[in-house]
Amino acid sequence: MDLKQIEKINTYEWEISRSVQPWMRVPVRIFSDEIMLKAALQDRSLDQAVNAASLPGLVGSVCVMPDVHQGYGFPIGGVAATDVQEGVISPGGIGYDINCGVRLMASDLPRQAAEHLLEDFTRLLYQACPSGVGEKGIVQVQAKELRRICEQGSGWALKNGFADREDIETSEDGGCIAGADWAAVSRRASERGAEQIGSLGSGNHFIEVDYVEQVFDEQAAAVMGLHKGSIAIQLHSGSRGFGHQVCTDFVHQFQAVAAKYHIQLPDRELVCAPLNSTEGRAYLSAMRAAANYAFCNRQVLAYAVRQTFEDCFPGYHLRNVYDLAHNIGKIETHRIGGQSVRVCVHRKGATRAFAPGHPDLPQQYQKIGQPVLVPGSMGTSSWVLVGTESAMLKSFGSCSHGAGRVLSRTQAKKEVNGGQLREELAARGIFVQAGSLRGLAEEAPRAYKNIDRVIECIEGTGLGRSVARLVPLAVIKG
DNA sequence: ATGTTC
Image (cartoon, rainbow, N blue to C red):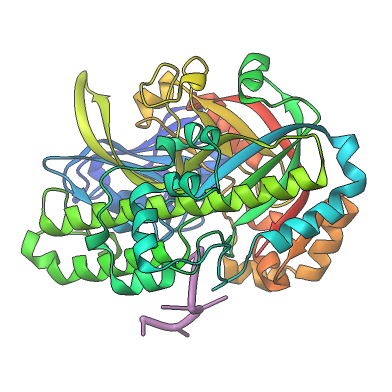
């Protein structure tokens, strides 16, 4: 992709017109400033967005967030909505880690009161939360119980003593998406998933101890229980081997039946099936099962984090602020060209960002809008925002999900020494517990874009409104 | 992201 093929709409919005490639059914709308746009041109992410514009049944535009980077077929930081009657669903548009997502918990514990215990607390957290590739989780279940997890999500955690009612109320969709079907889940996925409930994983998954460094919207922050100077904890994890297997299964299955539906695509990694087909419906049901698995996984981990926190800091409670998905396909109603349309919103590396008053939001967030959690790269700030009416109109109620890579994992490992990085972070007052120094190197801050600039773009285009900024004190990596 | 090359 070349900058010359991109039309500037304003400082923070750009468009790739349908005329750029013959297969484009809708334009690509990029929410970014010029500097971030040029960063996006360094990899194949915008070519992938142009390819994604070929998916049958698309409505509106393919949306690209400022933190966009290259993914499997479809860019990470991409949003695409397909008509439920005429459109398709594409596993590549959702991602291998189905319902990869973030949870934020907050406390009234002042940072100063926590500092002397912080390293011990972090070590205990590391012991309490299994992490790393292939690790088993806090809970290991039989297939019969796994089925309940897939159908009930965090509701299973509540019934089994791993959640409070408040956790459920303050999770996207109450931590459970309807329409999951166990029959659509393969034996292999079931086997991989049975042992991993309550495990962090590896890569960019983390647990981070932060403090609230700044508040931009006092009223919204108060509703979320975020107080300047207090400790908050973020958790980033997904559906582990289970969701990965579900995605693998359906990418293969869709490829095998692609010819049947006469869908021409510029990249086979975008393989898809009509939402209104046997295969499409089966994937939607299996994806929902994996989404519920991930909700339950984060909930079980969060419960262990809370217990560790409350043991370490008696008298202080760690309450849930919000838990959200950023790799998922959701059937939603949006206004497009003055009409109300039922669509499947593919969010891949993008969070939902519903505006105040949306009926899907919990009572306590009706007035301020949905909390939007945007973690920065390791050692940098994270941001808490709220969803807006602009997001509803421009991006199917979506916002960016993080900083976004600028270096590939391979490149980062080449350029960064993990041990040295750990020392550098320690010198800045950030304590790191990592299972693998090589894994740590992959997540070096310089492998990512500048989170503050991502947020500036989001503010500029109005997809979210800043509420608070968090600064890290300790981080756990797999 | 991932029993990191079914």
